[in-house]
Image (cartoon, rainbow over all chains, first blue to last red; front, top):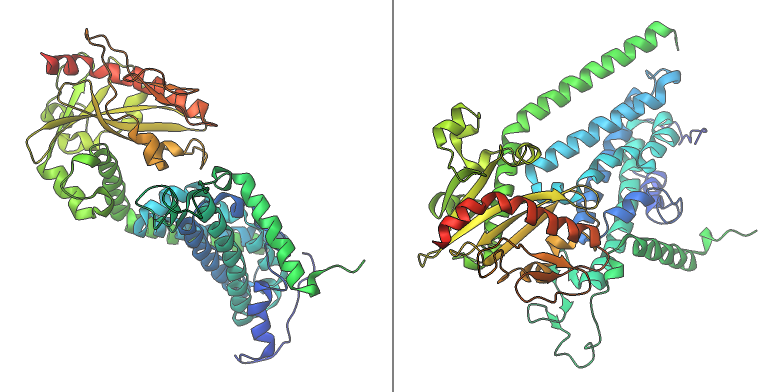
Length: 231
Length: 250
């Protein structure tokens, strides 16, 4: 994390190949979760349901985007000795803003995410991007990089949450899909070919997130040969 | 770049001041909305105990409906464990409870007091058909942090008509099932707090499956300590309502 990557010192705002790569790289080739294996803690904790995962994803996109922009704006003024502390202050401020806003507009989500919103501060993805990118690039590029990484994190969160909520509770976004009672869309008690299925409680528990993420990493590598180490 | 100590200090001071001002403004500006949300959330939890006896489906309740039910169908009272009702004026003047209403009690603070000094909230819910239900409150410890619950009793003061539990930090899929798993919560309906001859017995969350049809419910596997917490908080805190519940049976 010590060396700061510098994209060309171009002037003006344009959206070319390089800028597109800033946005799309973290979605695939350089995904923060499946390739860099960062931010695993929160990916385990908030993926019990799609709703929590979606709120968390939005929160991280917001924090990533603005932390990158503000750090980049201040990058020439931040004294070298205290740069980490300054970055932390910026992240902590944004996270508090998210927390206060969420408490005002989506109280139920705020309650169910409880401490995990606050823990975005410790999410290595955010700090990693500030150190590795925003300290050496203009606000415009940093914004794209922040957005890309936020989305890269969010999309994995949603995929993991999909598997955990669907197979664990038979629900998606809290809507009942699969299970044994008339309230469910697919009532397995009466269905002849799904009659064996029962909500798998293991999927709701934390270890299953580990399994799902591990399988995702494997699938991602199988699909994208660029990621396989040749050694 | 000049990296002298004074520059570093100056930068940090300015940054901290700006950030502190910004957050303080935001916190203050949003405070009324936070308080309103908090109040609605606990009102909704209270109503959840009588979810089966509402005019509307509980899942589709809007914020306005919750306030309406609270204003029209619920009578709020505050008692002490010796059975005396605490009047609105006394609550307001002696205890500093806002508007003298049970909904404004600081239940966390009350729970830390000795049971003889505690102010306990009691809600009387009148169903549209005229039947009355009494919602009582218990608070205790789960595995990681606090758990609490509203328990609705029928007018005999013993039979449970519904419960709603909540928790601060129980594990999803295990302890958190006390809130999320509706079919587990429904087990409490029809259980009794008192024996035939009027002794307080409470409901036991039993590992290995309930044996007694009136005083036991199945425990959740993997959530023994949370289940024991519920047994304990009901046995401890509901005892405070005994004088009132006894008066109902006469």
